[in-house]
Amino acid sequence: MNRERTFILLTVALLWIGSGSAMALGYRSGDQPGSSTQVRLMKKDRQWDKHLLTINFIDKNPESEGSKIYHAIIPDPDTYIRSVAREVLRTLYFSPHDSIPECKVLDYVLRRDKGISAKDGGNGFVNIFYSSDWVAKSFGKGDTARVDFETRGVLLHELTHAFQLEPQGIGPYGGPNKAVWELIEGMADAVRVSAGGFHGEQDRPKGGSYHDGYRYIGYFFDWVRRNKDKNFIRKMNKSCLEVVPWSWNGAVAYALGPGHTVDTLWHEYQVAVGDIKADARP
Image (cartoon, rainbow, N blue to C red; front, side, top):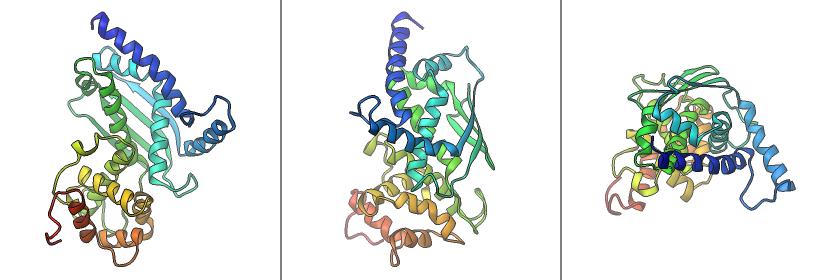
């Protein structure tokens, strides 16, 4: 790595320390240091932390270029991960006092891998790996902003899997009822979209169906949240407790009221974003 690239990395690291620490403490832009607003925000934000106890950050390839880039941009992984976890929890739940799955131990592993990231484990013990090869690739021609943006976006998705509720009464993830997979992966991308973890319209998949999961559902849920009910994502997450056996129509009716169906809602969304014409049949 040449001097110019190293200088860029160190500069960004210093900027990250300044902005990331404020974000992690729950400060709001414009608040004066030590103000009562800062104290209130910090106390309120910290209530979410009880749902994430121990974080074990494990770097398996510290000699790799991706690892060095990661540490230059994120010098304090524990603070960073907890900050993103708060974003996820605030998006999924109404209150820190809701029925939220506890993550007793999170093993966050940075390693060389051809994949990007994945979550494994359960029952309070979660493992998330993130590829240092992907970090190096994202860095490209010294694009530290891209690494930061991508790393946060991927983490938003994977941490959603650690804390989201799962549909009940219709089988497991990977089972014959595809709706489980659709909601779990779609919800993770909905949180990522809602938290600004994608590049807006350019990352939105065109057409398709909510049965396609991931960003198809992610952008769909976010559109409903912005245009129908600001708590839609929270209500769809909670529907996993309230709608048993879980179903798409049951969950949408729970979130928006009787008479609403997922196919009608998807059709309205597709018309609104310009993917189909208004006279197309749902």
